[in-house]
Image 1 (spheres, rainbow, N blue to C red):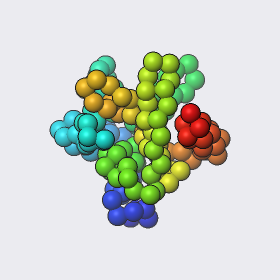
Image 2: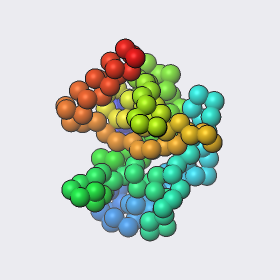
Image 3: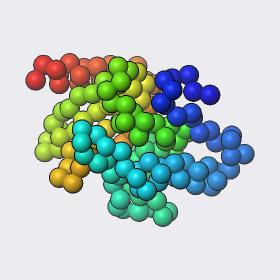
Image 4: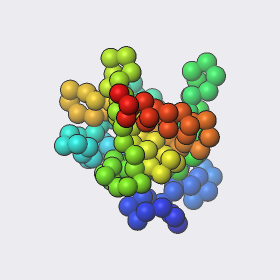
Length: 160
């Protein structure tokens, strides 16, 4: 059961699928498809889409970015904390005006990014593109240094 706001989906846990990774990844991919492939949320009047290519194991790059974390030498490995929260990005996007969601934008090189940070616990990153918003990534912010870095970014965004 979810202890957050009513609009935040419950976690999807590997043990709910008998610990079978193949079944689990198909279940969380189905949630991702429902939220970003079969339909798309809106943010600031424009649709949010996932990065479709490249496709790995029959699944879009945007999906993998939301469930994997980068490890040494750019290799990515699944993160169960990311997987469990695969239903959170759309909910946070759709509730961006909720007081528990901080929103700010920053330009990184030529890329304009907007961040939605739920309760200093989970971050959704969107890229501003011509055809709408691209879901860049989403992940739990459970490390103190990550939270501090994001607080500093918010201060920079407010001051610029």
